[in-house]
Image (cartoon, rainbow over all chains, first blue to last red; front, side, top):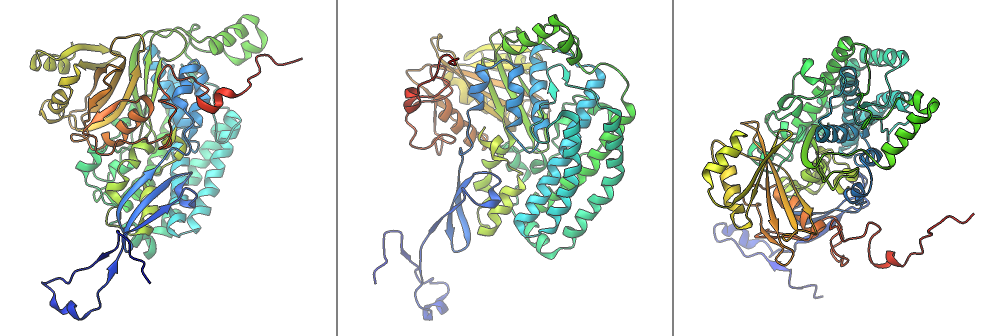
Length: 414
Length: 165
């Protein structure tokens, strides 16, 4: 039988190890394996072409774009207000943070000040979203690796917060609650009560998640020392968020370029040292505790006040007036359909989402629509380091590695 | 003026065509042939020390003589400052130096710019389409002359101008 083709190579006998001469000659062949696009652990639709030598990864080529919807092109055709719901669909697991990052970029373009209460509300909801994101990540990552129990515990608690979102804005995932110049509505007393209850309920549950994993030999074996990336490489690749902090770089925009109510809160940024998957896991779990701390402080410090900046040419009128007053309704209609007159210029504004630095680069030539809008999506940039980080590991580690970036393909492909 | 911009102006007497600061963002526009040299200065100079690449982007200005603008954004983790580096590329010779040798992350970001805007990067290790399919022949989607609804078979759709009543 002749299976030989040009890729077939015959191993030569190594002269330094003559004892192997007695072994039969082994014929080896490089194997190409498609992982995905339908694999459950790809968190969406992602294909990776793996070049294998035995079970070791020699080279991996991510093939992306299955979820490409041309969001940047759509942005050029709509007004600034109209784009907010599109940002929900980028990282559909954590829509609030995308809204937040986008609104901040537009506010920087307009040089718009947000009222203090709105800043606190934004911080509270963003941190709730961070908890949801990390719970989702922890459950999914543990499930990918084979620890199924954690998934149920994480999703049980995530459900409480999604219901809280539902009460806040009427949607669980695609929220669109942030507005340019503030937020859509204030927290009701019932929401504040529920959040306070959750803050008391949650910290013991984080300990519970860890019980399943910290002493789980399989979890430790599959995360410790897997997908190590040095600090220098991580910075050069432009990684951000827990992936970069896992390598020992304390880059966190909440501290480096403080925004919203973060400078008024005391919290620490956990930093790893080994740069492996375990450190990234540890950082995310520690961030859960920090998020609880931040939300507590914000709830204590928050004073009464408006939740939307009062700049009628840009910000939306309050909903009660829209429903009762003709002028307010016309104003809302015009702001959505024609937009406001943005000054010509260009800005970049990065926000620390739970995945990493989510940035918006907006070029304006004046008028109601952005001339060009570029989204700096952390998932996309993390995938750029996949080949570098996966070389030499086993096939089964491939899922661990892109799981540890916390990728969501909606954001990656945009 | 922003101290970084001052420093760049002093170092490069020719090649820098624009320095701008707006809303706290510092931006440098350089000639295309000076791009790699300026980028190297930003990366290696101890006073600059831009070790972190934020994003690579592109803007289409169809009415200008040099149609495309390529934008890099850098951050320095140690010095905590950021800068935007821009250069212009004409449509007839749509090539610019790749910065993958200075920042590894530029690889995927420049591929995206190539895919979306059709700007080629010299010395890029693997310049292929990244978000659109490999065999996509309908052009570059983010160019201003690319219709929003798309090209090719989508042009033959019968769109209703008015909803019949």
